[in-house]
Structure formats: structure tokens, C-alpha cells
Image (cartoon, rainbow, N blue to C red; front, side, top):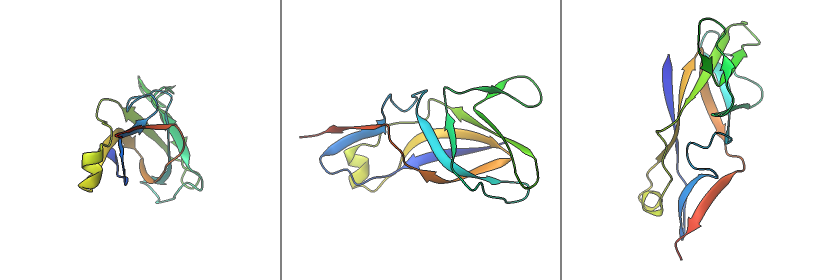
Length: 128
């Protein structure tokens, strides 16, 4: 099991608190990224959608996860679990200092998330 922390940066001019529409732990916010199989190195041809509110049973054992996907090349199962409580909004101060803000933590088994894609569903506040 490996944990990946997604961090964001942006040039926020007269704006602050960039985050998903429902906050950093929004269960309906979709994270889109390509997945790389840790067994064979195959990269998914399209982005995969993972959200905190979607849960599926683990292929083996008890419990749930947010995504189970089979590699098209080697047929191994991999899982991605979204772990809430680690994200915070990107503020204007962090943006000006060229810092990154943590957005979400992912526990991955069999896959590595790569190439995050920004989609819709964000909110930001004006400082003016």
C-alpha cells in the first residue's frame, strides 16, 4: 500500500481559498487522473474518475474502497481509496509564496495515479 498526496498550486490574483465546491472533503467531487499499473507499467488510456462518495467492496477480504480497476494488459486488480481530512484550501498567501496546498490523500494498491486533470466543480473567494 502506498499513499499519494495530491497537492495543488495556482496563480491566485485577488482570490483566495481555492477548493472543491463542497470543500476539500466533498463526497461528490470527482478526481480525474490516469493510472499506471505497478505490476506491468501499463498506463490507462483515459482518465479514471474517483470520488469519496462512491464506494465498492474490495475484491478480496472485507471492507470497501472507492475504485477497483483491472489492468487491461496484465489483468491484475488495483484499488484506490480516498482518505478525507488531509486537504485544505489554497490561499492567496500560499499562492504568492509559490507553495502547494494539500488537496486529497489517496491510498493505492496496484496502481499509481499520474497526470491529474483539473475539471469543473471548484470554488474560490474574492479578496477585493
